[in-house]
Image (tube, rainbow, N blue to C red; front, side):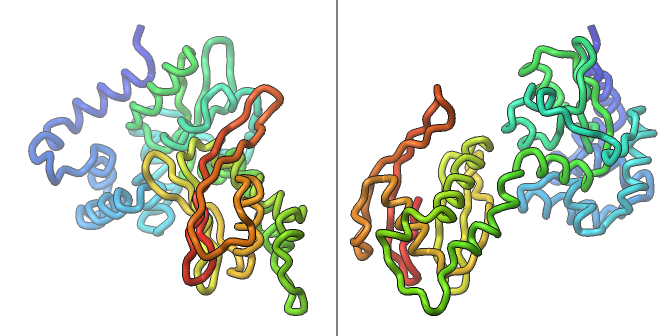
Amino acid sequence: MVYHSDVIEQHFRIENGENIMANPSEALSGLAQHLINEGLLSTQVAQEAQHSAQQANTDFLSYLVRQKRINRKALSRSLSLHFGLPLLDMSVMTLQEKVVELVPEKLILEHNLLPLYQRGNRLYIAITDPTNIDGIDAVQFSTRLTIIPILVEPIALQQAIDAYTQPALADLSDYSEDITPTENEQEDTNSEADEAPVVRFINTILTTAIRQGASDIHFEPYETQYRVRSRIDGVLHEIHTAPANIASRVAARLKVLARLNIAERRVPQDGRMRLDISAKKAIDFRVNTCPTLFGEKVV
C-alpha cells in the first residue's frame, strides 16, 4: 500500500535529490529550492530565512510568512499545485475536539500539524509543509490511521494550533493583573500564597506545560518584568510575561505547594509537590528556589 506521504517523499527526492546531495553541509531544503525555482524567493533570502528559522527553532514556512519575506497566498497556491494537495481555508473549519485528541499534543506542536476530521480509517490533517514526511509518518504511526494531508496557510494553522493547545493561556494576562499589588497594599506572604488569582495563574501554567510535554518550568523575576518559560525537547519557550511585582506572590504559592519555608528568601531551597491532573492521574514536581537580585527564581 502506498500512502500520501510515500508519494510526496518520492516526488520530493526525485526532483530535488541531486541538488541536496551536491553540497549537504550548505544545501537548501527541497522546499526552499522549490520556492526559488518558482520565483517566490531569491537564493540569498532562502538561505538567510532557512538559517534564521533553525536558530529560532521554528519551521521555515512560518518564519517566511511572519517576517513577510513571501506572499502567503502565492506560497500556498504554489505548494498546492506543485504537490497536488487540496488547499483549505481554515476559517471555514470547526475543530472537533475528539478528532484533534487522536493525535498527542506533543506531535501537533513538534510537527506543526493539526487533525481536522476523520472519515472511517482516514484522518485528514492540516499541514503547511508538504515535505514534512516525518510529521505525517509520526501521526500515522501514533493513530494507526491512513493520513490524508491538506494544505493550509501557515498563519491560519498556527492560530488554530494555538487556539487548541493554549486556550487557558489567554487568561494569564487577566490573572497576572489580579495578582499585581496596588501601591497601598503591603505584602503579606502568608495570605498572598492562597489568593485565588495566584492559584489560577500557577495552575494554568503547570497544566499547560504538562500537556505540551515540558520537562521543566522556569519562573524568573527580572527588574522590569516577570517571565515564565518551559523547556520542551531541550529548548526553553516563553509562556508568559507579567509585571515584575507579582514575583513574591508566585514564589510564595509555589513554596506552599512544595512545603518550603515561605519566610526564608535569602537561601536556596529544594522541595517536592504533586499536582492532580484528574481523579486517576497526578504529576510529581521537584521544586528549587534560588534568590536573585530581583526576587526568588523558582524551577
